[in-house]
Image (cartoon, rainbow, N blue to C red):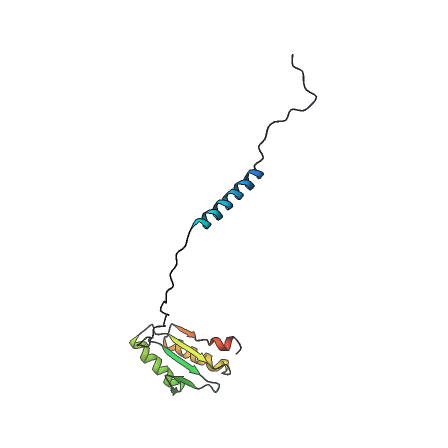
Length: 140
């Protein structure tokens, strides 16, 4: 015959959270101990400084500048819109993927800039983009 105890029977359990804490402590202490055991031997050196390489060839592109009066300038030559159109046509015959970079003055009108973009697209330039000045964007 079995008699029951007035105390409830408790099953044994292993609490894992304290074990994890102990394991992290041991891991951290072994890491710190292994780092302090290493001896680093260094030597003073004078390393050469890097210099930006300068390209001797200019990339094939059309850089268009538009001033506040709407004047178009390519390679320091002032052009009219029909002259600009013929220049882009000539350059596209040589290289069909020549990019057109437009750098407009901050006071240039939106219409002048769009006129140049539309002209370049009309002639067949597929890569038309704007060249931005980082100092202007920063408000300097």
